[in-house]
Amino acid sequence: MSLPKEINYTEQMTSLPTNTQSKSIVISPANLTSLSTTTGGTAQFNLQNTGFIIPSSMYIRGKVNTTGTGNTAPMFQRGIPAYSLWSKSAVIVGSQVVEQINGYGRLATALVDLKLSPAGKSGMSPSFALTNEVDAQTLNTRLNGRFSDSNDADEYTFAAPLPNLLSLSEKLLPAEYMPSIRIELTLDNLSNIINQAAATADATSVTISNLEIVYTEVAFGGDFAPTLMSLADSNGDVLIKSQSYQTATQTLSAVAGTQTLTFNQRLSSVKSLLTYFDGVGANRVNGIYDAVDVTRGGATGTGGGSYQYQLGGVYYPQSPLDTARCRAGVFAELSNAFSPSHDYYSGQMAISPLEWSRDENSTSTQTSPAKFFIGVNTERLDTNGVMLSGVSTALVPISLNVRCDVAPQATLAHMVTLFDAIIQVNLMNRTCSVKI
Image 1 (cartoon, rainbow, N blue to C red):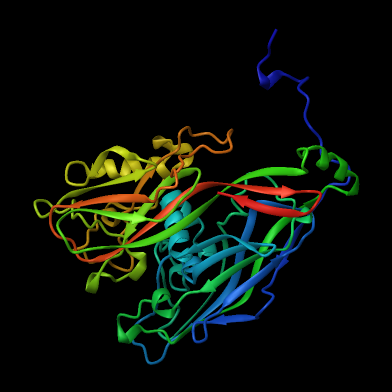
Image 2 (cartoon, rainbow, N blue to C red):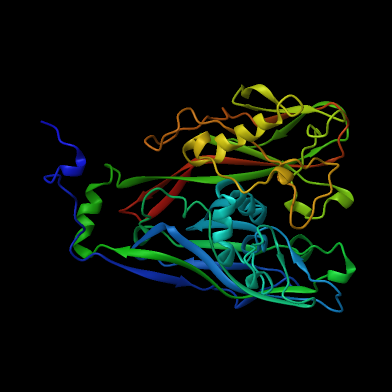
């Protein structure tokens, strides 16, 4: 007779190897002690080739000082302050660049808005550095950007998850059986980090110090090696499923009708697609951290249009996302693409109705940026039980068809592709490759 698991007292549980230990690893940049927008630069973190890395434990922390001169109003840092500092992230294993994400700060900020509820984002505000000294004295939490502590100075610390190929791995990473592992983060330009539109609130520099990448490492003891080797195939390889992001940019022309934007991304298993369009001109208060509707589908009687992807010869979704006919339908597809388990009812995003309503004619504010994202789920089956659940591009670039009934303003379109990646580690030769 079968028993409910709640009273099945004979159920066997696995146990850890006898010599299992874990410890926190702290990695400082190997090439510098601080970064400044006056000189630019890239921080290089060389991870230890010991033990097994717990992917989800990885985060970055540091201290930031922003300075201005003669301001009469506070300075404003855009996006999620912990992320908007960075323009690019790269992961290098051995001598091979296995991941490079351009526009990293913009992408990481978007992921926070797409995966956390307003309450969840508020709860993480000290780590994300969203709360300055004034905000900290109230019950209100700023959910977008950060105003400086005073007109000419701001100082804060941050500690935020570091989304990349390593941290998104589904199993422990056997670092002691891999070649050298390096993470590189490149500092963004001052004009992207800080809103420099008002001469009374300009910054002169942003400096980052005390930079560290932190993660937890597990060691199973020397007698565990034979057990690990037994898990490899005949060639000594183990396969670890992960996921990663690619970004690409195209220009939308100021022409009414349908435009096809082609993005040269060729991947074996695309899970989701995401696109955002930059705001333009005086309306672009938040710079690259504004995402607007170029079809103007939210403005009654003044516009309309649609969005539709083509991937591997198939349209996603099958019917174009018409912003004038059902703007909420665009939001539903976005939720399905990035909510947990692609379950619409479990979707939670930190996007307010006002932020969602922004089109290219709207003027965003520092506290309510434009957050009109277009996204679709392309998985063949939502499961982590298979290696490749997404759709292959079939060696053909991904395209986005944009129909604008009224000529849009020329702007940039940013495509983000979420895809499956397989990390292949040869335990005997201590080599590693990544298949995408």
